[in-house]
Length: 327
Image (tube, rainbow, N blue to C red; front, side):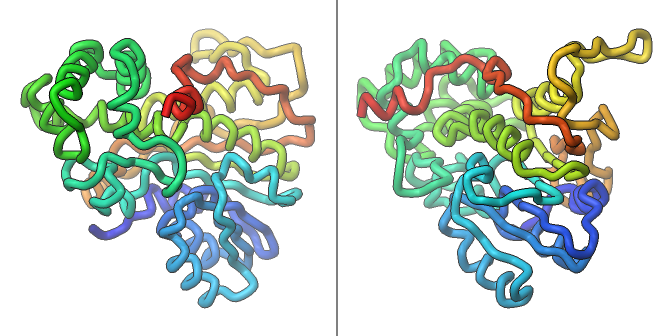
C-alpha cells in the first residue's frame, strides 16, 4: 500500500520551518514528514525511530540531503537525553505506521496473518501473545476497556481465557477468530479492531511514550519553538489536549459562554495559537482512509521553565514491566 504522510500540508503550515532551523521528527517511519520538511526550507532534520526497519529509508534520505538529515535509533520519549539543545520544532505522528501495518510478520493487523507480536521495537520486551496468554481476565478486561474502549471487554477476556485453556494462541488469525466468535460480525468494523488496538497500545506503552515524549519536547524546544502532534484516536488526543492546556496555564477548558480558568501556579511553558484541533481535508480522507480520525494540535514554547510532571494524565492500567516480570 502507498505510504501517505497524514495531514502533510497542515503539518508544514504549523511547523513554519525557516532557513537554518532544526526540526526533530520524533516518529520518522517512512520519512514522509522528514523529506517534506527538508524540501520546505534550508533546514536540518533529526529523525528518531525505535524501529530498526526504517534504516534503509533513513540512509536514502541522508544521501539525498547530506549534512541536513540524520537518524537516531531511539524512542522519541528519550529525545531529551540526546544532547539536542534548543531545537526550533518537534513533530510527532502518533501510532502505528502504514509500513508496520502492511508487514504481516510484525503482527499488527488482523487482516494479514502473522505472529501475534505487535512490538514496534523488535527483539525485546513482551509481545501481544505474551499478554494474551499470561494476563488475568480482569487485567485483560481493563486493557480492552481503557485502550480499546471495547464495550464487551469482560466477555472478550473470558472468551480468550477459555480459548487459551484449550490450546495455544500463536497468530493474529488465531486471535481474530476468537474475537469474531465472541463478538460476531456487525457493521463495517471488524470485531477484532478494538482489541488489536488495545494490545498494540499496551505492548508498546504508547500512551506512556506519548506523555514522556511531550515532556521531553518541552525540555529541548527553544522559546518560539513549535510542537506539532498528530493523533489518531481519542485516548491520544485527550493526553495531548490536557498536556497543552495545562502547560498553557489552563486548569479547566473554557467555552464561548465561559472563559477558561487560569492557573496561578507555574508560568505557562506553551502558548496555544489555536485551542481547537485541525482535521484532515475531505480530499485527503477520500484518498487515504487511514487519515479519517487524525487530529493535529499545535503549541508554541515560551521562555518559562519546564512544568513539573503530572502522571495523572495517564490512565491507570497495569504496566508492561509487571507483565515482563512474570515471563
